[in-house]
Image (cartoon, rainbow, N blue to C red):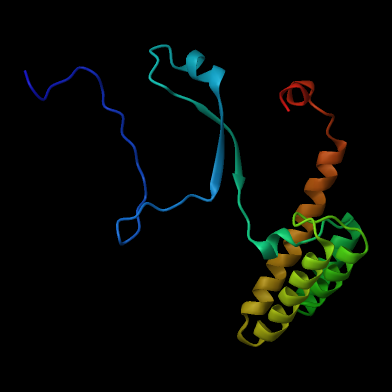
Length: 161
């Protein structure tokens, strides 16, 4: 009997571009190896996704982690006058607020560039929408940083690292 099998074939799906080249995913999946054996007694290689991390660009990584009240004020400024909150947040990079870039001068320059582009593209409404989204990012980053500070350290994670 050729062509027949009792084993189900594993199906993989991979998105490709128009030229047939596989697209790169901007997400990183963390798998828990012990859950594969527990959930999959037949050993077909199942795994559980524990965390999805997105990769962001330079402009997003230059957003400073400001105190929550400052982030809310900058968000309101970005809604009222596009780019003003981003301009103010650029100065907080030089005042000690942390960014994912690490270099305060580079983060300052990127935020000034983003503020300028938001102000210039306000005429075609794109800058205003971008400015509002940027303001929401200020609050989201400030809130997530507050939650991480309040969360107790996990001893299992400390042993792995």
